[in-house]
Amino acid sequence: STTSTVTHNQSMMQVHNTLSNQPIHELIKESLSAVSDADVRKELCGNIILTGASSLYPNLEQRLSHEVSKLMPMPKMYKCKVIATRNTVERRYASWIGGSVLSSLGSFQQLWLSKSEYEEYGMALATQRFP
Image (cartoon, rainbow, N blue to C red; front, side, top):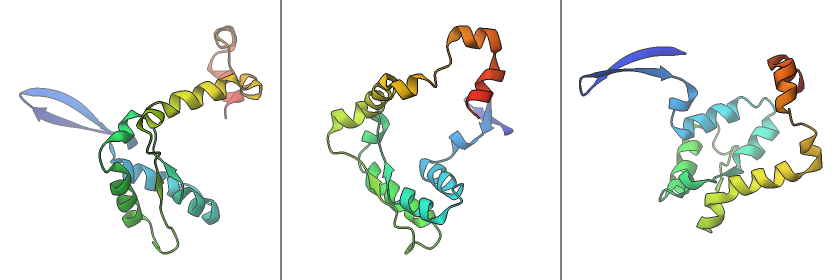
């Protein structure tokens, strides 16, 4: 990534230009564009799910839907739909609940890399197990 210097209130700080510095609608477009199968891309575009506390900003669902639709090529082919539950408590904690459910599945537990395994084999095992 490239680095630029910004002066703000007489302090110097490094700003790294990475994907995380981009607006969320551009990140979504980049993610969708990385999917090579057009049918899968179309399906994903129609099922963008907002979750987590940051998704509770007023009008985020409508604005994000509008912004992503503007960025996608052939808007008639890609009907972008942002989905967000109206239950704010559920939406705030959905990612934590999902992680809890996932971690309790036996099939997911087989994918874990224990601390002792990591200490013995290091990143080599991690990259082998999670390519």
